[in-house]
Amino acid sequence: MPEAREGRAGLSTVALTVVAMLAFAANSLLCRLALQQRGIDPASFGSIRLVSGALTLALIVRLRAKPAPAVRADWLAAAMLFAYVAFFSFAYLSLTAGTGALILFGAVQLTMFGAGLRAGEMFGPLAWSGFVLAVGGLVYLVSPGLAAPPPLGATLMAVAGVAWGVYSLRGRGVGDPLAATARNFVRAAPMALVLSGVLVSQAHADPAGIALAIASGAITSGLGYVIWYAALPRLSALRAATVQLSVPPIAAFGGVLFLAEAVTPRLAMASIAILGGIGLVLLGKARTVRARGS
Image (cartoon, rainbow, N blue to C red; front, side, top):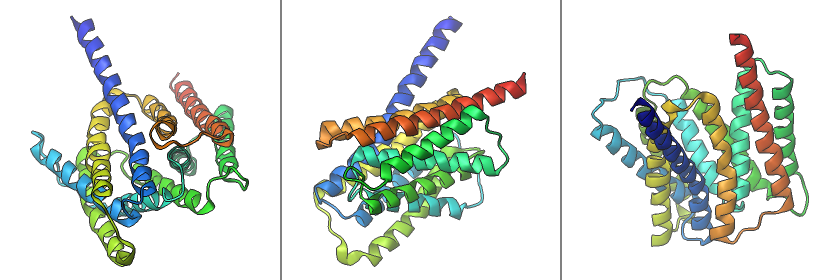
């Protein structure tokens, strides 16, 4: 019987993880679809995404049996969340779903690796090789050429990735990550509304664009985080980081399937370099931890 319970728990973790990764990849698809069809402007998309995400997460936290502990407001985390959503939205005016997800994911991971190095974390030869490979892949992806993504879009998405990386670092060690995420959404939403007010002359939104923004906020962001945080306690740090390697390929495949986007040789080669490099860093870090523990 214990084995059966462990097996069910394992299957449940796999299912939750798969759904969470699909939700995270879907954020790129929903944003790109809304902007590609010109159904909404980027500022309005970001505002609706944050507001609907805040309402969804606040409702879920309120309905939980476990009360959320009182903690000090982290306005820097909220600002980084707002920056991520804003730059993400404007970047998808020109980037394809797969390219945007790859730049975002690469920038997030490199930001977190860089913070680890600055804090004195040791990288072995394998991890350093992976770090250089990932950086080289990102540089190759955005380097000038006919197949290069638009420089402005790539830069905006890289900034979004750095902001999300800083946000993730701020969330390390938080006792109740779901409640903290809900509070950060609530604090970031007014920032997005202010940006929409500043850019009100460019605002436009049709029902389809609004629906896509709500879906991104309430479902693939709000519920996506709920599902991810349900799976996270059952995953090691290495596995949690590794499964996120699946997000850019899922987004690229979704772009081909739903948005008629092409996977260029440059994107394919850069994906192998960036995701393979990140994988080597994670593997190298795991080996270092095991060596210290032995």
